[in-house]
Image 1: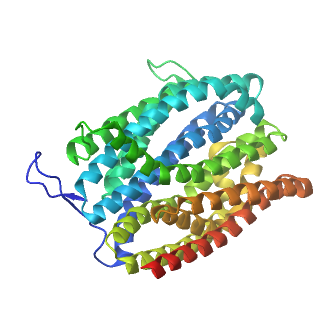
Image 2: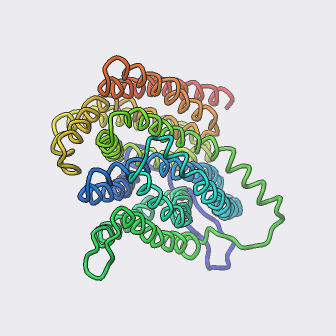
Image 3: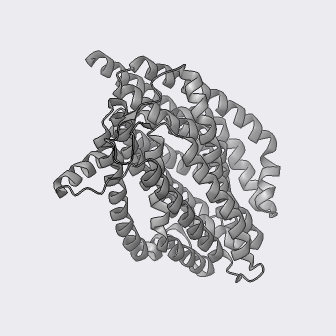
Length: 459
């Protein structure tokens, strides 16, 4: 979205920038900076894992216990951001400047309300949740310390996620990527200083990773607010009746809540799997936490492509360029299949040296290698699932996407992992995860094709 105003006080017209040019080239041009940004955010988490792993296996296990809880909150916020981005991108396609500003502003005020609710709920439920996951003793104490600091800085986590989605709705993928890369750089510097107490900094151990995260997110909060408000002028402070704000919230939540549910379901599943694996001891939990983060890294290119495909689909659908939408989906799915096959080959060959980066414990390394080599076989179809789910949200079919996520996690992954555990222990759990990824990808592709056919029949 380009700001065509003659000045700050102009009427605020924007132009869709994703409705022209070759589809494949457009997606490639937009995906490259997003790959850098998403790889950066995965590296952000892996940086914590790397430095905490240098302290000891107990601390690494504590960090792994926090991962599902943190991921639930982060994924919920991403869902709200997807809801806002889907509406904003379609408003851009229509050339509706008022709707762009109203939706951006209201999505951020909604995020603030959600932060308040989550902080209160998080502190009240922290102890029983982590006990249910299997944390106890010193590990539970470390987990609660980490989460108390993380929750205290939740606003700094949530705001950039929503605002970056608003920026992407313009077709600007470079700015969010630069913001995310800035976060990585700051985290790489702050993590060792605060975890190990280098120079004048106190040695905080695992708590230092949480403090570094909050400080880093405060930087991205400042940058994203500056971009959205002062550079893009996507915020408005005009007084409007609360019912108009409420109407915006309802529209955002119509897509955002199912999108959030879609994204929350997966970490809930990870939480259940963590509980299963906890029976094998803290080393197995530590390994599983690392393996899941390596998986996010391996799939970062697909996550980047899906982030690009959302605004691309929204702008072209809003501008009635449905042929470009079909072409974009087809090219993206083909790429996802090829990427998944390539990553499986790479991880099968290099799983052990990758695992050795995060731990020197042979037991931890062996579990990481087992997960990586077993589950990665299904990454090709899991990529199709990721892309299809995102497109369904933009096409205003969020319930379809949420149901697919629920089926993937609770009807496929958890039962198959449980059955696998009974039959073959840890290897069976991971085989169940891989099979569920493959079946979910096929189902998502079939559902998306049916939705597109029905929409095209309606004209």
